[in-house]
Length: 252
Image (tube, rainbow, N blue to C red):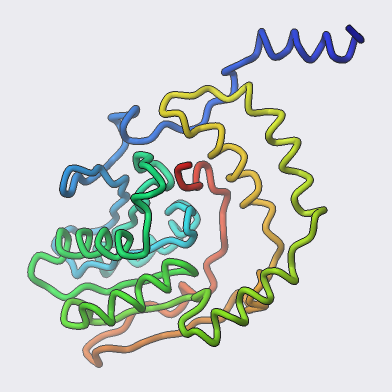
């Protein structure tokens, strides 16, 4: 055996499991969560629970709530709720067959009805989350007073076709090469729920995203839907920037 291969084998034996991916609420009971219909959603809340609720819906599919936490500044006026969508972030992993557009909207409805307390809520969604917000408003307009859709990926069949075309044009084989290096590191990732190694690779790849994205949208682009004239949502959330995602991929 050549020395480099021997050294690699030795390192694998003695360091396997030394890279820790954050545990989900299933394995870390100290994490805040809300259990709805038997599923524990990882949540972060800020502000007075009696104030009007603002629910923040993160991007993806497969992102998590952390990069949107700067919006917590709204807590001086509202009760701000962030949640990791099913099988993302620090919420428990589920089988991929359980992850559909319909289930995502049903989960959002559970979050809304839990925190609304017979009041209308305000929704803020980014990217994939913005698409969910728009769809949810279409289904339950009576439950939402205001909605902000920040950089939605696609909202119509026409915009979907353009989005996919630009996405394909922005990708190349060279963009995928770093994945090989991350895959080689997976033997060192400690596993509890069986998804950590996939999460490790995909999180690293997500954090390599090129600025601008396939939609060629500026960071300040914001589509806003006003459903009531009584009050407004802070417009500066459009300038919030992405932070590192610690664990944001969907289950395999």
